Image (cartoon, rainbow, N blue to C red; front, side, top):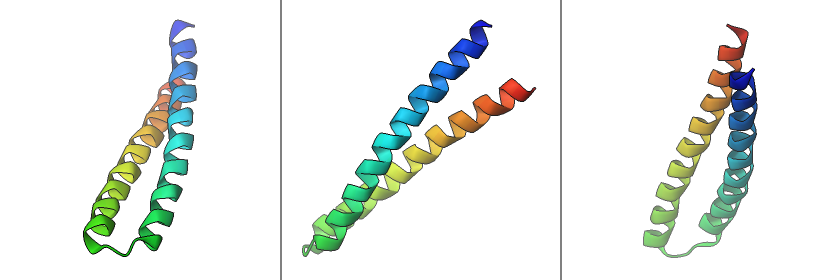
Length: 71
């Protein structure tokens, strides 16, 4: 029972992080398009890659949690 509650909390927290990251990813993409300076644009592209990796990590946590519940 405790692990199910913890799993729900972990999933809820991960989903909240994903939602925020999605917003930040969109904002970063929009800013990249508007940016004239190549150095700043490259920096934002690096940031975007990191945000996408972080998002994938949270999605993996939710997926792993779902697999653990099924086992």
